[in-house]
Length: 90
Image (cartoon, rainbow, N blue to C red; front, side, top):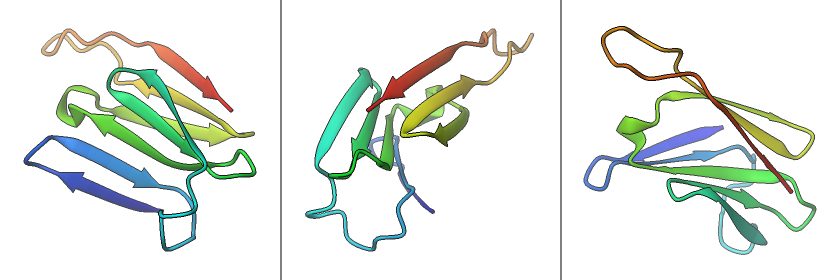
C-alpha cells in the first residue's frame, strides 16, 4: 500500500495494489461522491482510492470483496462531524 498526498490541491491517493505502475492497470473509475473516486483493475479489484478535499474527509477505508467501505470519523463535540457509511462496489 502506498499513500500519496498533494497539499497544493488537498488530494490523497491510496494505492492498494502491489503493482508499481498505474498506467494500464486501472480499467475503470467509479465516482462514489464528488470527492471520492475508486479505481478498479480489469479483474474488478480495487486498485486505488482518490479523496479530494482530503482534509475534510478524515476516516478509514475498509476494502473487502471488491468493495470499499468508508467510515467517517465519529461525531466530535469540537468538529461536529457525524458518522456515516458509504459503499462502492464493482
